[in-house]
Image 1 (cartoon, rainbow, N blue to C red):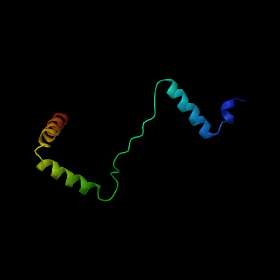
Image 2: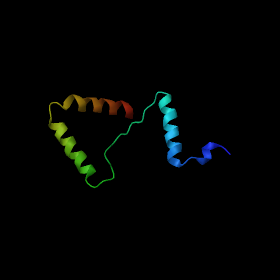
Image 3: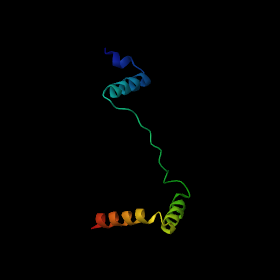
Image 4: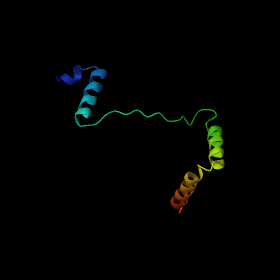
Length: 73
């Protein structure tokens, strides 16, 4: 019987993470907006309107438009 079968799930996870760290990797947690929440779409529209009115946002919006045009071609 292998020692692997005697390990708890937490011990297996710890062992797996140690192996990855030895390979030079590290865990990263990324938090992103939850697109399923109520109000997400309206907040996107609000921020898009603000960006469209901002002189600072024009280069970014131009870039997005150019990129979108290329992708749809």
